[in-house]
Structures are given as C-alpha cells and as structure tokens.
Image (tube, rainbow, N blue to C red; front, side, top):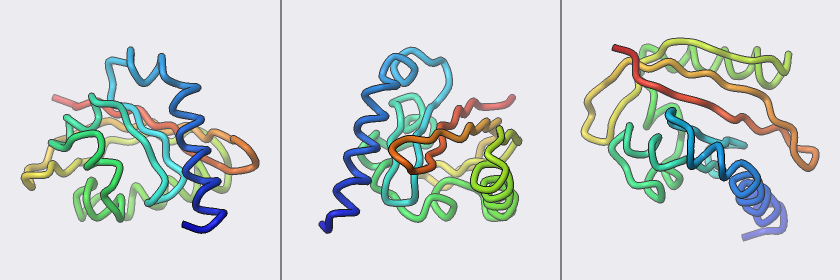
Length: 129
C-alpha cells in the first residue's frame, strides 16, 4: 500500500470514528465514501444489501455491485453534478441490488463532506415501499 492509499484509509477510519454515533444510531443505512476502494458503512446498510459490513466495504466498483444497471447513470451524474462540482445535497430514488441479485427501491440522500482536503460523501439510504 502506497502513502496515498494509507492516508485515504486513515481518513475513512477517522471519519467513521467521528460519525460513530450517526453510524450506530441512524435508522437509515449510512455510508462514507471517498472512492470505490475507500468507503465505510454501518451494519444497517450492509444488511440492506445482503452483505456483512466487511464484504460491503470491500466490493468495488460501487455502481456495478449496488445500483441497478438502469439507475447507474443517474447516480453517477448526480454524484458528479451535486457532490463533486456544486457541493450540494443530492437526493433521488434508485433501485439497489442485493448480494443475491434481487432489487429493491431505495431513497438515497448524499451530502458533501470535506475532510483533510479531500471531498467525501456521507450518504443515507432507506428502503421505499
């Protein structure tokens, strides 16, 4: 692991610790995302997708494993437009994909989060009936 990778790993762990109360107590699934290799989630989120926390965090690329193919472009566009460029909240209804391949409808709200000169996303996900 190179120096940048180690810095990113530490930043994700730092944010997970800083937001521990949110991660542990939220009724929603919660994730912290820097990029496909550097992310964290709470147990509610990983279980929503049918994974353990460790499995969910290890899966890459994010879109291919967790978002229905027809919704991937929407999620990607929203992330780049709202989080990366405008640094505003992003919110949409998408179809998530479970480990077993079954899809479910979910509402995802993402907020930009700056930490140690890096732009993260903190996201909240809940199933929609």
